[in-house]
Length: 124
Image (cartoon, rainbow, N blue to C red; front, side, top):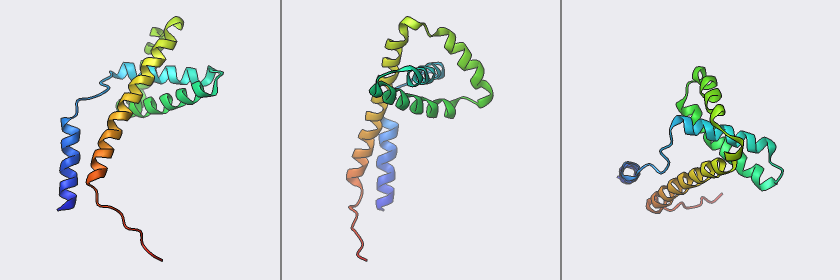
């Protein structure tokens, strides 16, 4: 019964939530490129760390949505669209989108966590 209730709450949360970051595959590929560039070129440790998070996040999104055989052509096409004078604002948009999605997922996790039974430590 408890498992059914939790599954129902989880399903309702997923179905009722509008997508926070409905980015296209091409936008995800651009963010992956930008994250990689910033991770490899940034001087500040905080920027490198943020870029690493962006790279990992978008790597997961891209790898789940783009077959490996199509990745190179998409990567090259999107790399051509990135202009040097726009990399900062584009990277910021990628980072903000990642943060928004993280907050949305975390909110669902917290909501569902409230309905889970409390764990009781086992004694040895």
